[in-house]
Length: 384
Image 1 (cartoon, rainbow, N blue to C red):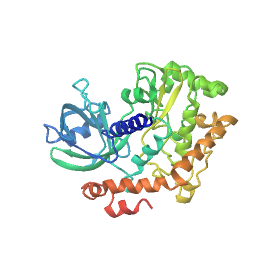
Image 2: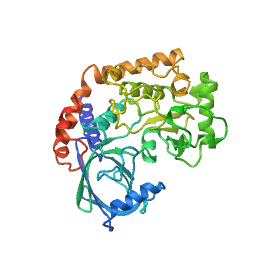
Image 3: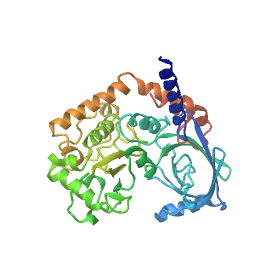
Image 4: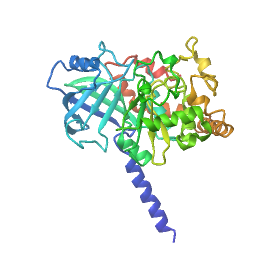
């Protein structure tokens, strides 16, 4: 009588395996060959980046043998971009001209140049750990060729877009923001992260990029409650998901994130009326970014290993933390989440095992990368 159950379980396991074998399967290294009509494509992409208006250069892309016409390409990134380097981060919009031209449901590909990471695993491993506890992007690797020239091995990270939101948060039409410093609000150290600046939406333009049609009133309402009525914050914020993000960022020493820096995250308001934080841009995890914006010299290895679990909980510039952790229940939840992440990834040395596994997958491609920023010996040694 048990046979049907066994057969069902085996079939279900098979289906689950197939679902996992998509474009972002960590075991697979993808290939994209981009072709532009213009031979001076690099200069044109540099010009578009300098213009800052997110216009794109039109080309064709062959991805794992599948042809995509009229795709839009631009350079992306902040410190990882330079007009003087060959291997720059890429944002490739497959449906830029042709509606619904997608790959496994993905319309935009975001490719990072593995800047500041000799190990090549900081970003992919970080997303793998994050996905256990919160909505987070898939990530793997892709070899990039443009007009027949091999630029190198890139990390390929799933875009946080409507496809992502629909899969993780069961809707994609609600208020949606990216935490992004526009440059007009003073130095990053002067920003109150999730501060309340009043009811005028223009006072928030320097700190948030609107990704939906509207939503300022609801975002401002959440920030007002957080700063002035934190006892009711669950009416506007998914606090449990927020605590997972805080615990994760501290444990991963992710200082290029809102525990320290007012960018590299998204906020989406679900159908229950709660904003959900979403992690983004994890390439400087594991201490790749080592400065505290509250001041002091760069942190050394020991200081990062001993990073205060309650960093900035009393600092007035961090309502994102200091309005949450004083609540006794939230504080216990936060510590419990931290213990879970430690137990499931670090105390058992799983992060170490997985990092070496991933390096084993990409070792040959890293060695053959003509434009990597570090030597192959650094790739082998950097994890330790």
